[in-house]
Image (cartoon, rainbow, N blue to C red):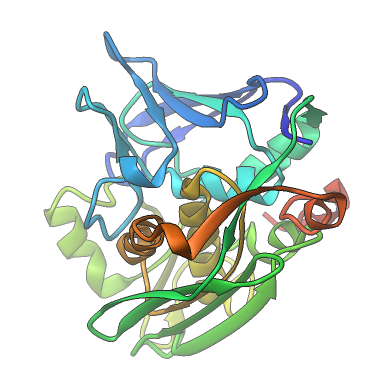
Length: 306
């Protein structure tokens, strides 16, 4: 059955790129509502559906969505990953600015609040998108691919010159709460050498060593070091789950990313939905529903370290 959150959950933080204070609330929603964002600080149409075709193209550092009125919200991928990873299919996310709060740079604060609030089952079946044949997109040496599977798998590979990151790869079956256990507390990361150029371009103004993993060569500069030895690739997988959630329904597919980012994953969804013979919508049976991300999530699955 479809789900929503039992009661509203609220967050206060700063936007990663603007550095400005942000307040947001995840509100319960009815069956078939889907996931929507609403700008509470604008007049007129502030609603934006969390859908692949509302994603602004060619955004590299985050996922940004926009509506026909020109209103935008950026850095939506972490809360989208949390909703998907906790099995929430219907919610309204209200935010009082053009950017989501970055919090600690991971999805863990969202997951904690969602699990604490609890899930409410709704009287409607879950429909999933079954991928029927492989679809692949490329951008130079970056590749994103999606292919048939009976449940959602995510595989990712990255390769950075900085020894603190280096070459990393990971493969996960996203069933049975693995997102919460394995990925949700992995933080966004950057190289110290990139910070000045990002800030000169008006980006990462709210970034700190507390809400991102900052590396310089072989050194991790953020206090406390890494939460996982391979935290960087885990965060890329977190981002991928959030970006795939923009499909609008859970995916039965295997996603593979090699040096891929937000823009390429969105390009992959656009390529998939441009080919009607590459997918179909199906109503979940009991066995399939039991394998979806978020089913069986427990509070004890949330990593205890902040």
